Image (cartoon, rainbow, N blue to C red; front, side):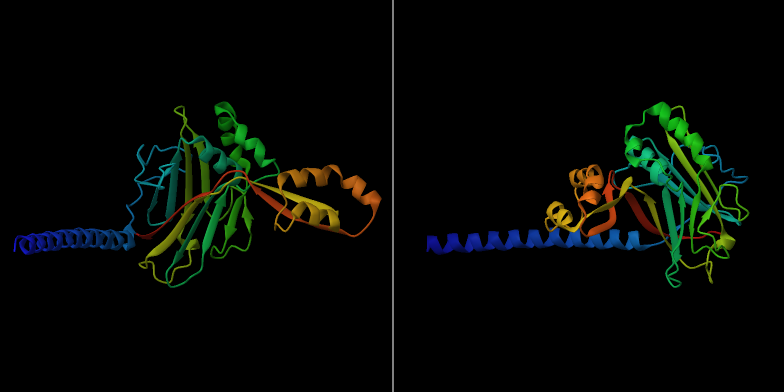
Length: 283
């Protein structure tokens, strides 16, 4: 009888424990659903301050930008007035800064119905070796920031613009600037005229992607087929060591004769950082 009572008490305790586990699970589920719903809602942009000047400073915006990537590598805001859509980015992270200077910021937007992805990238990478950007000190970053004004703007699918690249002094009203403060903050500012955005209904939610592009070094290689098979060993891309050996032995390969192949190779020096979301234009 005592054994039966003990077993019954254990069963009751076990049932109580299962109930507690279920309650905790349900609470977590409710909270996660609520967080997902909140994340799915489009952010209603705050109106931009009056007389915005795209100069690479935070003078109009205040020092604290409301949004950040998951690791808080950079902060940003998106805003608009009756004429322009604005993007502002601030970062003190040295890798993020060199990524911006070496490979640019890509801001892509679209409406959920149109599916037309419109992109602006600035600054477009030049002919410099991207590996050199990884070794910049503070003074060099400041100098490169000043020189960025002479870089090109990459354009994709903006209304009535057929060109793929523009200068920073373009006739379309697209404005970009990068600044570097005494405190070591890099400030990226961008203004896009609303008239250049495909949008049949300005009240539709917009989806956006903000990407700090990583540094990428590109190679063009030429080599004999048998050497390619030896270096690759079943891999889809050549290793850095193989690339170096190919370049060094290029002349010897040509003199040796035999069938040659060529191709492109990319080496990722730093990782890209990307955030995505949705917003509503304010009037």
